[in-house]
Every structure is written in structure tokens, then in C-alpha cells.
Image (cartoon, helix red, strand yellow):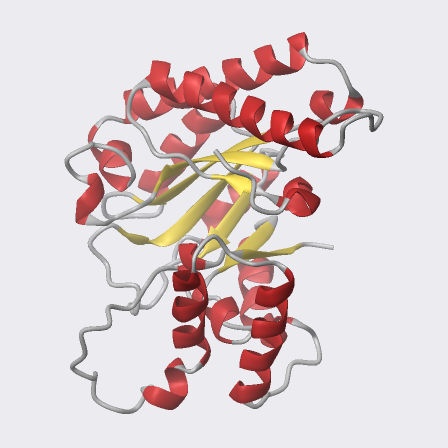
Amino acid sequence: MRDAHPDDTANLVVQPCGSDPVEARDGDDRAAQDIREQQCRRRRGARGGGILPFGIDLNLGCPRECVLNGGYGAFLAERDADAAVSCVSSMRHAIDAYKSRTSGDIVRNGPLLSAKIRLLDKDIDDTIDPVRRLHRAGVDYATVHCRRRRTSMRAPRTWKPGAGSWMHCHEMHWPIILNGRISNYDDARRVMELTNCHAVMAATGYLRDHRKYGPSMHDVDVASLALEYLEYAERYPPPSYLYIQKHMRWIFRNVLQPPTSPVLTSPITPIGASSYGPSWYVRS
């Protein structure tokens, strides 16, 4: 694993997929070791050695057909919850074992372990018990994408009907993060007030216009946003030019394809938030 920007490793969350507990454990250990060794090589002689990523997140939410054959992502969560829990338990063991054999305050304090999951079955309450099991297996927090595997990313989010369920999770004193078409600051505040969740995750909306997630949100010319992004991409080059290309599509999406217009027929397939990365709005 290559750490493209070691200066920002403390904010990095590594998200693996898998369905085998042994592979999940070994993957966690290798990821932490690889990143820390790269940090140490770059900072030879610095006190404290390398910096570990902020967290490691087990992907139990990917709905794409490409993960079907491997039996992981949302398919693992739906079809073999016991295996998903075993993967989390193995990952927890790997993180704790790595901390115990490695010195330094940075290592002892991280990384966090989390899992991201989609809604299961017919009701939000059906998702609560699996999330509780993940917590007992060792996750420090869980992120719930409030859509089901078969639901389009354009479909309305469904966090509202289960608000009471999320509030009950809050009373259990372990963090729940909700995700699903949270497009701006007002959306974030409404979701947090309604559900009492600890934080929300923003993805595609943040790719379109990150400035809408501030209290003084206002519309900004998309060309200005694109220029701002290109300046950051020059300062922090992504692993491939495709990251820039995909992010630009999101920035100009509403210009090229307004929400009120018919869907365009194009060889360009809408991409997911993974092309650049999500953002979190956390309860103050």
C-alpha cells in the first residue's frame, strides 16, 4: 500500500473489502505496517516514528455487482452476518495486537476501527441489531448509508421513519454516523436534530460544492470551485488523473445535466464518492 500524501496520513481512513476473517486480520496488519514504515523512511530520525491512519473501515455497504462474486460489501452484510462480525473481530484483534507490539503514543491512540453498512430488510429496526453486533465485535463507530442495496443513489434517503431507532442507539453511548443525500449544512443539522446521531457523512454533495456545508452557505460559481479544486490537486496530486476527471464531472454535474432535465444518454457512468473521499459533519 502506497501512502500518496504522508503529511495528511493522520486524516486517512483505509477502507478494505473482504469476507474472510483471516484475510481481514492480515490485511489490517499489513496496512498499518506499510503506512508506518513509509512514514518512518520519510521522517528518518524524527521522534515518534511514523504516523498511522485515523482509521480502518470495513466496507459492508458496496452494492456494485463487481463485489458479488467475492461475496463482500453489502452482499456479505445481507447474506452472512456472522462472517461480517467475524471479520470485524479479527480486524479488532489485529489492531490491538499491532498496538501492543509497537511503541509510541501515536500507535497506542489509533487507528480506530469502523464499518459502513446499508439498510437491511424492510425496516430500519432490522439494521439496528446487526450494527449492535458489529459494535460488540469491536468497531469504535458505525456508519449507516440510509438506502438499501438495490436502491438507486438518486432515491430519497430513508433515515426519517426510523428516527427513534437511531436515538436509541445514541443512548447506548456509541457513535452512529448517518449517510444518504445530505446535500448541505441545513440537511446535516436536520438529520442530527431528528435522529440524535453523532455525525453525518456527506459524499456526492461534498464533491459538487463543499462550501454548502458551512453555516453561511451560498451558491458559488462552478468555475471558481473547479479552479479551487485544481489548485489543491496541483498541491496534493492524486494517484491518477482519473480522480481529477471524475471530480470535475461532479462539480459541473448540475450545469451539464440540471436536475430538471431528462437523463442524458452518455457513455460516462456516474461515479461514486470514492473518487475523492467523503466528509463528516460532527456534532459540536
